[in-house]
Image (cartoon, rainbow, N blue to C red; front, side, top):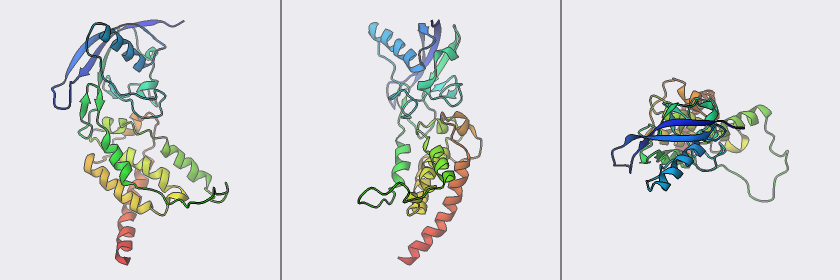
Amino acid sequence: MSNTLNLTLQIWRQEGPNAAGRFETYEARDIPDDASFLEMLDVVNENLIEDGKVPIEFPHDCREGICGTCGVMINGRAHGQEKGTATCQLHMRKFSDGDTIAIEPWRAAAFPVVKDLVVDRSPLDAVIEAGGFITAPTGTAADANETPIPKEAADSAMDAAACIGCGACIAACPNSAGQLFTSAKLWHLNSLPQGQPERFKRTEAMVETMEQFFGSCTNHGECSEACPKEISLDFIAYMNRDYIKSKRVNRKLAGQR
């Protein structure tokens, strides 16, 4: 049997990108402690609609910690206080009856507010698009063992591919740096045999697109701490190494054309 919580919410409201934002206070009453954080916001919105008021816009989609759509600052921390947990996976049992919870959108220059808690995260898409494609031969399906992949490489690629692209690393970083996101997206391709033909072209393009939108990494490490998938800082080192190599390799290839 679940217990219920009565909470005070201080939520950022902003009508549009060019409007002035402000915190507004709401009461969340009789919230089951087995409800998720987003379900709690659903209850608040249902009450607002019943009262004829404008509901709170907040980002969400799958609500299973997979899509990366959700994400807000909860009491000043990206995704809240639970390590390795996306906002949609955070449950109200992690709070206490009578708590006051401050809820804000991601705070980064590259993520302008669209409305309320929703931000424009299209710069993340631009970094992905800069990576292009991987070379894959067409024809019949290859035999399972035709392209041997060392277990260490496969494991490392899977660890990097766990990134859901939520942007918490950027929101948590004092410099709004995008290195953890970009390095994870790079390494899950660059570490595999299938990703080698475009490896250095991909690295140069994605890193330089990243630098158009985000700040510089100064190794605070806050990105990895805030990441709901606990992506390792090691991937940033791999990306920096490949970027240095890409400048030499790509220059040599350009000279051959």
